[in-house]
Length: 174
Image (cartoon, rainbow, N blue to C red; front, side, top):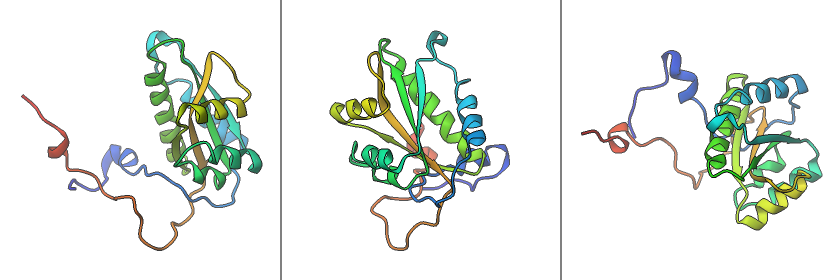
C-alpha cells in the first residue's frame, strides 16, 4: 500500500473517502441542486441519460431505506439520501449509473460534503427502494448515496481495511 500523498491538480480526487458519519447540519437545496445539475452532465451511452434522481430528507424514509441493504445502515444518519433510479431497458444503463453516481460523489466532495454510496441488494431490496421512491417500470433503484457534512469517526478500530494497494499491484503492461 504505497503511493505518493495527494498533491497537485489530482489531490481532490485522491482525497475522496466514504463518509458514514454525518453532523446534523442540513444540506441546502441550492447545494443539492448544484450537485445534481453537475451530475446530469455525466456522459452516457448514446446520450440516453438513463437516470432519475430522487432525494430523501425524511427521517422515517431514511430509516426504511437503511433496512434495504446489508451495508445501508448509515443512510439513517445522513441528512440527505440521493436515490439513483435507472431505466434498465438497455444493457449499458448499469454502467452509466456507476458513472453518474461517481460524479455525484465527486461533486459533493468538491463542495466539502461527504458521501457514501450503497447498493440495495438482493433484488427484493432494490424493489423496496424503488417503491419508496414512488417509481415503477422501467425505473429501478439499486443505488443510494448518503450525503451530508462529515462528522468525526467514532473512536475504536474498524473492521474495514484502510489504505490502497500499490499501483504496481494493480497495473500490468505488455
